[in-house]
Image (cartoon, rainbow, N blue to C red; front, side):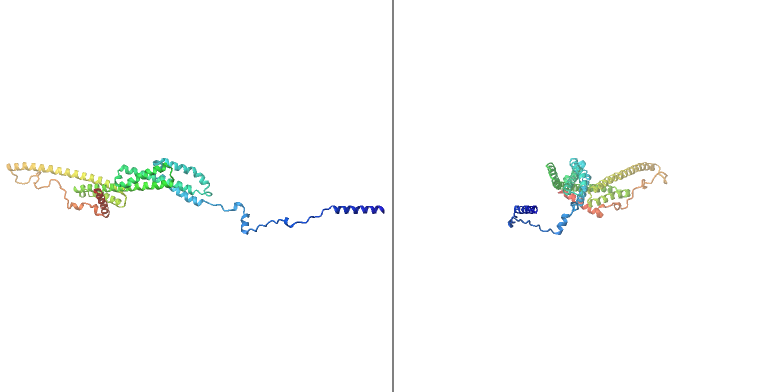
Length: 355
């Protein structure tokens, strides 16, 4: 019994000691509590956008824009080739072609994902400038070969000045747009000189053609060579049409052809008329000689009747040309509508030459 009491007392002491050693909990101070601010809720649309994966966002497509620029570039490139730029301006054309070739593959690979508008515009302007300059230099050569600068001295001086400016701009590395503007001025100025020169040359050719026709008229070529004469007159009529419709080169060729044709016709008819006239003169001389012998013989032994082989003094020895109103065979090329218009243009040229 004593043992039980002793064990119970020891257990009680242990429990009491453990309760006394546990520290009391300190009170929590309100100032030490920090509340974390809550973020405002995002709208549902923004939340959805953030939730979308990266690959689903729209990617810009430059295909249409690049295609439009490429079409203009190809057109300008073809124009430069047609203007024979490879022959006339090989250095400049070669440089443009190198740029085109160097970028061609890259542009094709990134045609839809990158914009090449600015780059294409620059190269397009370069090709256009080369085309304009090539055409201008071709016209300059034609003007010099034909001696046409005298027909428009003001624009000739303007063209020469602009060409010198273009060369300096190119050497200084001016941009394509500036080169194109100057090249257009050069080409336009040379074009005016060439047109004025070709018109002037055609007008002078018409005067020569009409003069040759009048010489043919003087030997009645329209009577003796009616069909040929008409075909040559038609050449002048056709050339008149070309002159009036502003095709001076074709007009010039037509007038020169007509001049040569009428000159040959005049020479041919004149030769035949001269040969016929010589035969007439020879026959006439023979008749006169025969008449002299006949008169002497008739004095000695007069004939009682006509003798075979001896022609009467009033007989026609050679058939003569009978031109009934030969003027009616003349074709008046100035009486046609085109002829009247061409004659007016021709008169303007004569008046300008007299100033």
